[in-house]
Length: 71
Image (cartoon, rainbow, N blue to C red; front, side, top):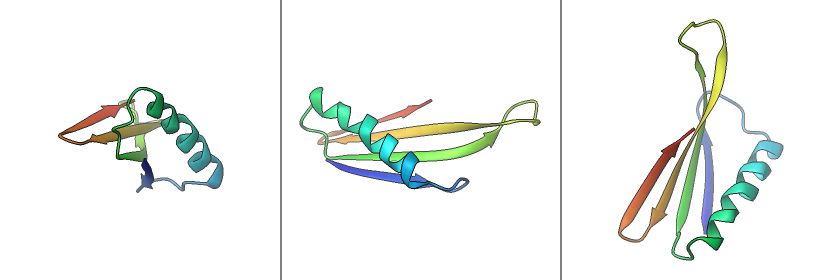
C-alpha cells in the first residue's frame, strides 16, 4: 500500500507524517486490495473567520473504486 501525504497550507513535519502513516496502515486489516492512499492536509478558517482548523481529506484507491472522506 502506497501512502502519500500532501499539504498546501501547512508544513508536514516528520511527526505528523509518521502519525498519518501509522493510522492509515490500519486500513490494511479491512481490505488487502487498497493500492494507494492519498492524505490531503490543510488549514482553513472557520466560518467566524477568527480561528483556523485543520482538515484531513483521505482518498482510498481500490481497483475499480475510489473512496474520498473528509474530517
